[in-house]
Length: 416
Image 1 (spheres, rainbow, N blue to C red):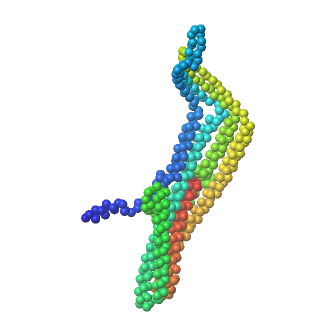
Image 2 (tube, one colour; image 1 turned 90 degrees about the vertical axis):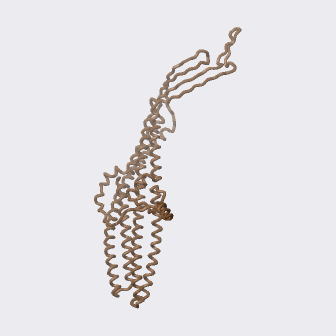
Image 3 (cartoon, rainbow, N blue to C red; image 1 turned 60 degrees about the horizontal axis):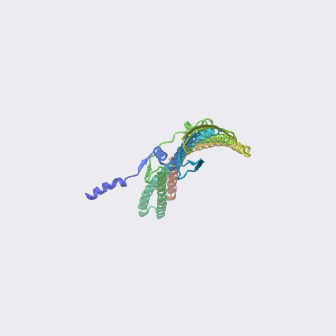
């Protein structure tokens, strides 16, 4: 009873790994992945920078004050037989308020640039989410492929065990040659070796996926099967010219053009006049009775610099480069869309071909089993048929996983 209770207590600790669907894997990764957290932090920093830039529209206020006490007056005046002592102590304070009226557009354009920075950070976060989702999808389907290979190897191993038993009986009965038994045993060794390699690769892939999902344990299982034929991708195709405007990559190029335009205006604003108004209140009582003063001031600053034309032209060239990159980047994105669409169509056709190959390899294996039993073919022919069957199963798992990955790539590259 004591050992039973201990076993029941340990059971939750040694239980099977939790099974996740692709949607669950992506959701956890988008919540827990370090890249997402970093991109989210960059967005928050950009939002703070925008709020900081807005404060430039507000008046600046400065306060200053102090007190002093001296053991002897700092200012003494002789008046007949008497001496007047001044500034032996007192208090002072002032408040100054300054508001820029015109700053060459630097304040307005600086705020627009900070606002643009938030929009760029949002697009970069979207890009990061796409990268994480694609990586999770690739890892997920890699695990599916390796799992299917293990299942195929297990079925092959079972088939070889049955063949080994039957041939062994036939060899003992003198019906078959011992060479047939040796060929089966060699194939069993190769199968076992492949099983070990695939098992280790699968373990590593699960650990990588778990780390990307933010899970501490590497025990993660995926839930899917290849029982159904994938739906034709025709319903996924869209007009690429219309989809271009919705992609984060193209929108980032557009934002870069806007940023270059604002930088050019800021460079020009550095050499334009600055006008500001100031006002203040001052109090002091060092010279006897307290004094209260109000003041107002208008200041105009006109910068004179030999660098002005060169600085503005430098930003003009950068703006032209941003426009060039926008046009060139748009063309490259259109080509990428078409390539991804072609890859998706090709992947779908490969799936259909792989399905037919499995049917043909299965029938070929069945016929060779019958031929071998009938004595009309040798063991090498049967083992070759078995190898073709295994290859067809592995090939189908690979092309099916590739189709699912290409589908995700096409949806992302078209802004979905």
